[in-house]
Image (cartoon, rainbow, N blue to C red; front, side):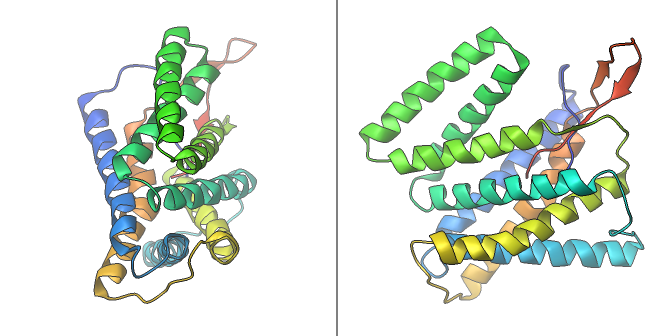
Length: 253
């Protein structure tokens, strides 16, 4: 997926889209906990990403979009797919071990700290850093050190993906192709991760678990990245020669 970096203030429409993206994020990982008794968390991730890839492919076929046409988004999207896989795997394992609100706070603060460090904003860095230290210390004190490490890894994957830059305009078709490549990579890697790292191999889905995985597909695999892309406006950077170019940043959804 590809996101335009935001440096200015958000407009009301952007704030609304960003709120919807956050709601999708919470619904996705909240449903993981609801279905954990029937399907192990990493297996839920593997199913959800496979369904997302299939639905996106069917949509593009219906719309007549060429997903496999050569484009500048191909190779970066493969790297983005690996980061996306790491992010999803770590967050699914984290919410399987701790309350959603704790994972959400840790993830948002850690991701914000990493992005603030990249941008060199000292006040934001100090505020986020203080919050992260408090929450990580709290996680260790309450026996949730593994959750803190998983969430930190997911935030790092998000921040690395967010900083992928391509100095070219990304059209809507390229954006959809970018996301499809990410889902393809994740659809290959997440089942392997589930077999290798899942603490449980439970897979007895009832209707509630199937509904939860469908919610994860719609909210996390499809809606969240495109809402986030629409919420963050275009950023323009100055080149060494003074020319203005549009750089595109691609985070993992």
